[in-house]
Image 1 (cartoon, rainbow, N blue to C red):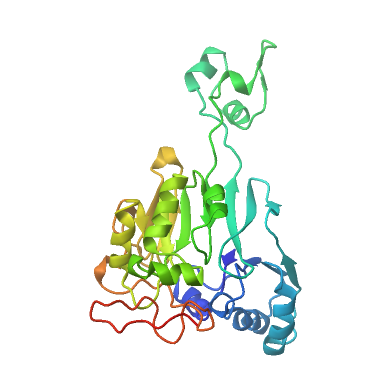
Image 2 (tube, rainbow, N blue to C red; image 1 turned 60 degrees about the horizontal axis):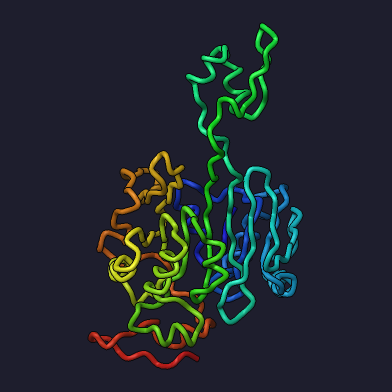
Length: 335
């Protein structure tokens, strides 16, 4: 699935090892253009390739109105396009995980999305199973799956006899564009990864408040309060470089990364090391994975490819966001 589809998304996917797969679902957080402007081109490309599989686009209320205008751009499609409007509190059940929809604080109707796995079975006690007479093989798998096993002597071994306490599944929370909000804090509690915007540095906190965006420090404070394992900062202004934003956030929450285009976050189970940033992991040649305590800020060689945002977003105005007095032109008030 894809969350948001800004201008250039299709191009970057084609440059990646992922490719332009026939995505079954796209989730849009809100209707500032930098979050949906890539959709018409992508939908048209799917049509030109002869796509037949249906596609579902989810978004906050207003999705149908948006697409009534966009249809003039992408025209008729040879595949079924379904539009589903989601509201705060909606939950999509996907079997082994749920998608939780929550409201964020961005001054317009906007959703965040939490991806929450169901609890996992507890650790399998091989010694206890052997002591009960269970032979290694398929019966081990049945017990791990929660099924009782009948032994040749007529005894039944129950899963709770050989399994430890259930273990939580993984949780990934994508907040989209938002000021630090209680709703994000609630959903993000204990998350493995929180993906949160950091449009401004702390020196522009007043402007962030005015425009319902976040500073790096504000996002880091929320991550610390939610006790997440990793904070991934996105939506940086082109005014900033990844390392300076990462440094600010890490003073509050050390487990912060600022991914670049083509980076991957490998969300491993806690017992396997937890989340880690894999630099250029979506390129053909992968670099060695970086633990989540690593730099993750573009190695200081350039800007994070977080995107500068939509010129229509009131946070951006006419000047680059976050202009500072350190030899930079002073920023004008948000429009």
